[in-house]
Every structure is written in structure tokens, then in C-alpha cells.
Image (tube, rainbow, N blue to C red; front, side, top):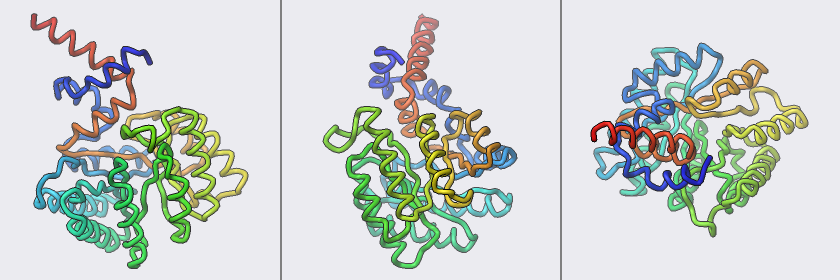
Length: 304
């Protein structure tokens, strides 16, 4: 990873969308539900679980949010018909959070109830820090209303996360713990890699102490090792936790974890609203951003 790659990350929004799409394709199943189904079938065939995400973070109207909610109902139908081992992950902004809390809550309850009717599960994803309070509020409200088939995400790089773990402990929550990828100010988030790792381990310990089911979402080999040590020390059964990774990332390591007997779930996004997700994945991987820049320069020179 070079300083040039890091600088290029800041310029990604200026890169032509077709170029971004080409390089980020490894992270996205495709534009259609059929694309996602095929990706999940392949993962299931390798002994992996999946969580399907309908990309849609550019919602500006209520009807768009309702369309996303309907898309999730279609996903559950595809899971049922295909006998897939998969659940779903939802972003609250896609369900209308930035338009209206009540609209988002209504759409979320609709998705959660539909999942329950199929014996399935919904993960409430975490977005940037402007949505954290409302995300955790919605999670608690639905859990206290009797919806047991929901989980949430916590991001270790946020300074508040350990406090959030303690505040959720009474629910014995189902939590995906990840590092976090959104750009946040240093006052809210750790910016040093080792500080983020340390926060991740502290949060993991606190979640396990609280009896939470943890989706250990990381590609960091050091953190995987720390998690494996804790799993062994605590004598955790294989159904008491799972590892989670992104589609197209560290596939060989994912297969190795499965071969060792661990549950592993792969995040499978699909849909037309792929651009924002692609930019974040590329910002997480500056070396690939550098490759995009080289391809773009080559394209321009070729035209010249």
C-alpha cells in the first residue's frame, strides 16, 4: 500500500463508474436476485453460509424504501424455494431512516415478520455514526417487542462500541462485530490500526462474557487468531459463534476455517445501487484503488 494509493482513494468519486464496477465486481454478486442466488448456491456447496444484502443506500423517496422492503420479501422467497442456507442483512437508510424513523420502523418490522414466517433471520447493518443511536434504538425496540429473529452490527473502530456492548448485554444480543469502514473523525473513531484491533478484542471479550452470539467479521489474520484462542479457551460449541467474511475476500482462508469445522458466513450484496458500496470497498483496499487509477489513465491515453 503506497502513499499514492492512499491519495487515489480520495479521488475515487471522480473515476468513471464502469471502471469502478469492473474492479469492484469481485465484491458484488451482480445486479439481480438470480445473481445472488447463484453466488449463495456456490457458497453453500463449499460448506459456507451466506447473508444477502439488497444494495440501496441512495433512497430519497418513500416508494423507493418500500421497494427495497419488497425486494427483501422476494429474497426470502428465493431462499425458501432454493433451499438456501442464508439470511439477510438490511441497511436502515435503505428502508427510509433518513426520511422518517417511523417509515423505517414500519418497513423493518415488515421485513422481520416476513423473515419469521419463513423461520429466517434479519441482521440490522450499521452505517456511519450519524445513524448509530437510531439503529441501536430500533434494535432494542424490536427485541423488546418480541422479535427474536434479529441481530445488529457493532463497529470496533468507534470509541463508543464497548459502552454499546454493555448497554445491549441484557438482551443477550446476536452481534456481527466488525472493524468498521466509514470515514469518521478521530473524536469518534480510533484511527490507529492497533487501537482498532485492541478495541475489537475488548468488544469481543465483552460480548462473549454477556452470552452474545457473535459473528466474528474480520479478514485480519491476527484477529482471527485471537478469536480462535478465545473460542478454544471458552470451550465454545460450534453453534455458539460464526466467522464472517465479504464476498471475494480471503476465499482460501474462509475455506480453511470451514475445513477446521467452524461456521463461516459470507456477505453477498447485489442490486442496482452498487456504486456507494463499491467505493467503500475500494477505500478499504487502496492497492486496488491504485489499480483502478492505472486502468483509467490507460483508457484516457488510449483514446488520445
